[in-house]
Amino acid sequence: MATAVANASTGPARTRRPKWRKDRRRQLVGYAVLTPLIGFAVFPLLWMAASSVKTPEELYTFPPTWIPDGVDWGFYRRVLEGTQFTDFMVNSAVVGIGSTAIVVVLSAMAGFGLARGGFPGRLFVSRSVLVAYVFPTILYAIPLFTVISGIGLAGTYPGIIIVHVAFNFPFCTWLMMQYFRSLPKEIEEAGRVDGLTHMGIFVRVAIPLAAPGLATTAIFGFINSWNEFLLSFVILGGGERRTLPVGIYNFVGSEVADWGPLMAATTLAVVPTLVLFLVIQRKITGGLTGGAVKG
Amino acid sequence: MTSRLASAERAPAHSEEPAPGSPGSAPPAARPWYRALLSWMDHRTHLLMVIPGVGLLLAMVAYPVGFNVWNSFTDRNLSFPTSEWVGLANYERVLTDAAFFSAITRTLVWTFSSVAGQLLLGFIGAVALQAVRRGQGPLRLGLIIPWAFPSIVLAYSWKFMLDPIVGVVNDVSMRVGLIDQPVAWLGNEATAMPAVVAMNIWFGFPFMMVALLAGLQTIPVEHYESARVDGANFWQELRHITLPGLRHVIGALIVLRSIWVFNNFDFVYLTTGGGPIRVTETLPVYAFQIGWTNYDIGRMAAVSVAMLGVLVIIIAVYLKVLRVDKED
Image (cartoon, rainbow over the protein chains, first blue to last red):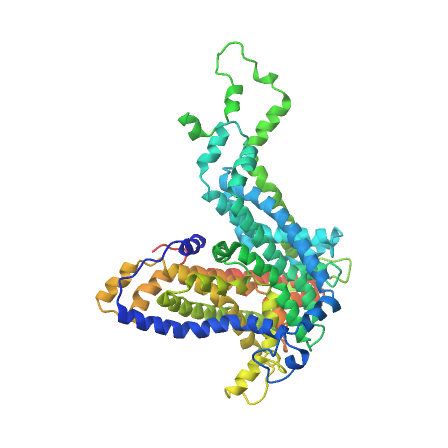
């Protein structure tokens, strides 16, 4: 499925023999169907962003105003200056970058080993990795907490980083395995003939060739870590090392939510993802749909 | 040279092993001991490279899951240091808990209605986008972006829209005359589950749309052309060409999405927390409440094992019904 999506985005659509009137009518119906669907898809997040720049008076009126009267950064100021939001953001960045750096190395090694190795049990291992990928987090989150707190790492950077590495490893390995398989074997074989060890081939031949795959894997690893809620919530609790999703969750103390700062916080939380999206625009659709990730 | 390429054998390894009977070469035993070790490792490089990551996975996922199964036979509780073997008592408690069975029902409702809604909207969107044939690239990218956003952002943007006091959904519903006075969508027993499902459909349908669009583009254009020559209308094309052509994609999508939606903890927990009065308490939330809120690890473990059983049944039923594992 991954390759189907990826190919579809690159291959030009074949032109259909024109049957103008029929096609024209279908196109109009298509537009009529698509417009509300697109509206439905984009509205909630646009509404979130629009509400975050309203003034408190404007936000807490009913019925709400559809277009903000002006841009007011008050909620953002309150979030950035009045709360620990920046601490959470730093925590998330540290955890995201740290766990991504480790998981990229581990998954590149494992992906290469699984793609090129012929050792017994290879199929079993690659299948187990895929099963681990669809395994419900809730089934190991709390026992994992007892393990992590048992070695004294609950509520610390190393603790959550190691958990996020394990959490990300199956998907990243799967991505890297696919990528290494798509590389021509002949180059590596030539390297072998020239006297390289298998490790030498991996470091000097395969890794440079797989650089785009590594970048994609790193971005997905980071996004997954940035977004992850349940494991961080269990491992970090209400401590100082809370990542952004856990921190935002704690903003809502009681039933009554302070929507203004909350909408500013959630809008800020998607900025890194948006930036990364702009970086890898084209590859992202294939990768995202490829694993039918999360949700 | 070609034979060497094919066997991909390392060149120095050859040169170190002298041809049998060639005079004047050193015996193999004279090689330094570490050479043998290095060569042994070199032959197992691939296996050795897989070990660190898989080892971590075993320690961080497999061990806790096994620990969980063990726990399900004990009275382990986060607030007490010791635990005792209690046999099947946890399972007995779980299986006699009415909340467990209603959680299963709710999870099935949540999973089926979410996936069905996502698939339906996604399919309509894909067919429409295929007919329009314009802006497919940007739309595909633009609509899929929220897929990569933190679940808390998605959940809270909906919670805000559905807010009983300032929510925009109330405003729109009152304008079009759907309701007379503001409704607490997520706080009302009758509307909480439909509201969370609506949110999940919103989250998932663009993904279905993109995947189905890719599937649509693999159906040969000739099939449609010959159908048109035969005078087929839109619905006949849909019934006899599009749907059969997409069968495998749809099958795979349903299985994968069902597993994810079934497992989904974040959306329900972050919007309603399982409330009001448990009407949205799906199995993951139920397990979490017992294990984390009540610290009752033993009982939670029993729930987890039961949940795994339900998951296996769902996957098996789907595979059977859709025959995704079978080729034409």
